[in-house]
Image (cartoon, rainbow, N blue to C red; front, side, top):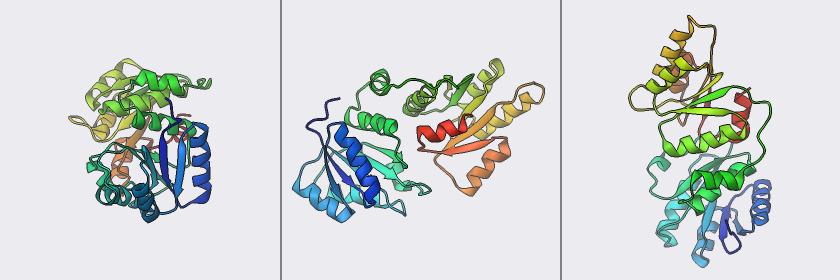
Length: 262
């Protein structure tokens, strides 16, 4: 990816994060401008044309969507890629689920490899998974053992999460729904199962119940980790009640996933 002439506007009011992001982006040959607030960012976007925006969603999670809405209305941008950064423990704005724009989400603290992947996807959306993987590949970890079962119905999420799993040194299988996950788990003793919660047909908790039932007469027990964008008390309780061991809130970083697969 040739970044020499691509301009990024970084909207970030935390100086340390802004400096870290700018240094990394400059090292990738981007031209970077920084604004400390949504209002200043909109003014700068009116004055200059940018190829991509990186915007912190703020402490309430809403600043990112506010910036994007104002950008379309006040600055006249009709089609623009945007990367929303989300601080630890801040919930993702639910309005982004219906946001009709090319965007991605990067949860802080910053993971350099993940940043590169998400920038590549935004600036080169037609690139294949193999091209992205090759451009960002690093040596695999040597401590990984066994195979992971990834249960996810979204094809794009399958590719991104699959790449994360591979980077940690694991092989993996993919199940597009809960029923396939149950069938695959009957054939292979997976040490880890990453289980999406909301899927058509048999969902994650229902599949987990069936897997746990089978394991009662087996000598193997998988560590089942929920992957979900909904961290409500009710949703988390349903995960644990079904027999899951842990949960991950999307989006998560490579380092966070590594902590779970141990």
